[in-house]
Length: 503
Image (cartoon, rainbow, N blue to C red):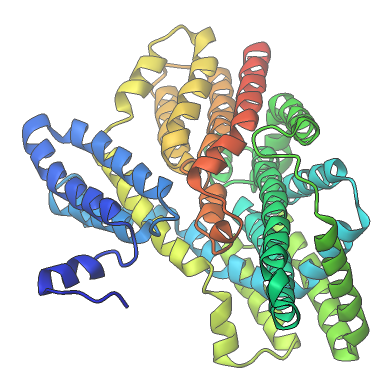
């Protein structure tokens, strides 16, 4: 622990812990400026300023987890009257299904990690083509996200990535220590060798995880269970599962094809941080790991894998048929997996929730910022301006406006605001039912596709960024934005063109 020479210095050292001093003073500056801005420039300006400050905390997630600085901004927003605790509770209550999802579904996936590691290690070892492997990750994530929530699929990707990283990291650390004992003169070369392989492996994992994360958006836009806002839109429009799919298909299927093509092109050209191959030494380590795991696997281990596979089928069927809220299905999975695989120790159960609960708390803070947006009507002028345009231009403009706002705010909130305004316009006789359906398609695709640009718009991206895996593979906010950029351009452009053609 850092030695401090005075009590004020001790307070500063304790404030936000190991975060850089400049970062700490930045947060203090934000907290001091906001009340002054409210008094001088008004609530609207201060509301937008608060959004920019919160985005800054997300961008600096690797310097300091956003819960603490973002939470301080949220508390101040309530204290100075930009929103109220009732509004924050209302936003959280409206997103209760998402909270349940994070609490239970992500934890449920934790108890399937042995099966996931078994399957994905086999895939990683047997498929030597990086292009084919990347395409498979993206396609699988898209398929799963069409039936599961994107956060659930992202939790799977994080578990697999963390498992792979841990296997090689243990080897590199162990090999380094072994070589130190036997050859002190060659220690620097050995250390450099393992560092290079580890960096290459991190780049390899980053590209796979980003392909998979984008895949969750490609598949999530297609069905009413893919994203929370899809279900909301479908409910407002009165669409069932297949009706939603076919109405969206003229836009979503061309976008899916172009997204998968982009995946192959990026791996071929190696731009934007893609194209890194799996190092030979890492492949050998994973092969050795898999061989050892296969040899030492007991009947009990095999029974555990079989049970995980059976419950995985139950999970997919339950979510595809939407027999209950996703979070409740996750709780069912936890009960089944732990009961039939003998996990009855409270401490064993606790580890499953370590990954999801910090992000759940961060999401509530995010809802506080959303409450500010709602209470200060920050998006209202944009919505009003679009509805005043010519009817033929409105679907394209709704897509563009939703896309831009979803890049900086929560896409669930943006969709909620827009679909409510459109439904009100229909109820007031301002637009026809057919035109309302066209705008609903634009809202759904607009909030799902361009929002891949930043972790702010897609909860799955933010979940990945703030996971324990992100710092291990050096996946920062900036790097994620850069790696998502080509996908953002392609998905947004194709979506915009198809919206214009179809509607």
